[in-house]
Amino acid sequence: MITIDEKLCKGCNICTEFCPHHVYEESENLNKKGVHIPVPENEERCTKCQVCSLLCPDQAIKVDEEDEN
Amino acid sequence: MEKTRESRFMKYLRKDRLPNIFCAGCGNGIVMNTFFNGMEMAEINMEDVVLVSGIGCSSRIPGYVKCDSLHTTHGRPISFATGVKLANPDRNVVVFSGDGDAAAIGGNHLIHGARRNIDLTVICINNSIYGMTGGQISPTSPQGSYGSTAPYGSLENPFDLSKLVTAAGASYVARWTTAHPLQLSSAIKKGLKNKGFSFIEVVSQCPTYFGRKNRMKSPLDMMQWMKEESVVKRKADRMDVAELEGKIIVGDFQKKDAPEFSERICQLSSEKCPLEKPSAVRSAYRGD
Image (cartoon, rainbow over all chains, first blue to last red; front, side, top):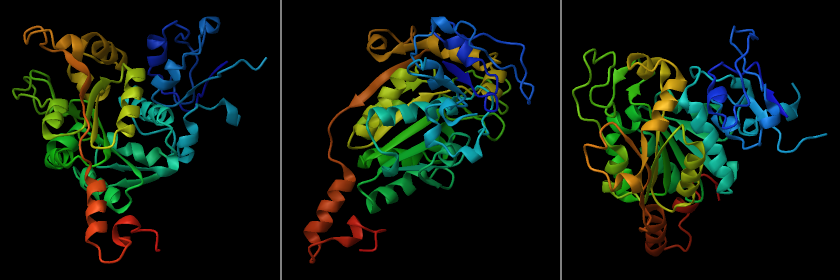
């Protein structure tokens, strides 16, 4: 499961561009600061490689190692 | 938000200070993540780490990390770190520094740290510009790049920091970019494990100043540029100068075994000390 912390995200979109499987997409949702928060639209493609959590400059992304259900 | 829903690096950060001050898409946050990742790979405990930094955007990183840290004067983090290392030789001392901090005002401290081969890990975040003060040209700005002090393009030859530090005598030198987070993590791991002066140059993006003035407005443009223009050292060795024009050479520049300074100082003082235990060196801050 992928969680994006809306309080920390600054909307740089590095995750949407650099995810090797294009899991993230830009969205129309705005957070309190008026930043477009990316959404994990294609989560079924995720291989849990953790590149997004390593590349997020604001430590806003959490990718669970294993599915809880 | 529940505790389990936070980034895996959140346990190392001072949460009350977040979100950090860096611009959207700044490379400093990525270097911070790769440092934590490299530290986990090297199996080093956060309790044993001391972070030292000077002045600049990149030097704000230790302020967000939950560990012993030292924010020092401009250009002098390596001098302070030398003192920390000699007083506490069992600590892992890591210096976070920018290109203006390490190469311009602290250039001498950098080469003399490398010459002594003291056991420090210096992570130099090279964004090719003075980001904090308004986009002035720094010693590593590529020739022809624009900045607020070079409206017609920089005329100066830039420093090749990795080659400079290799020539000065460091025992581990590597260069990667923020677009190579996995390779960078393993370089940081090697640097932390190396007994001696380790220098890791991270070519990073400053979308606010370098990118805006050099036709790469977004952090994505800058990271794509770094990814496309980087050439691995092994391949670059077979290319000629004309082909390497404008390329970023990445990879390990130096890896050698050399005598380490703090170990030799401890050995010397225990040999010369009339008492058996050289307390001045081994436990300056322990009070025993």
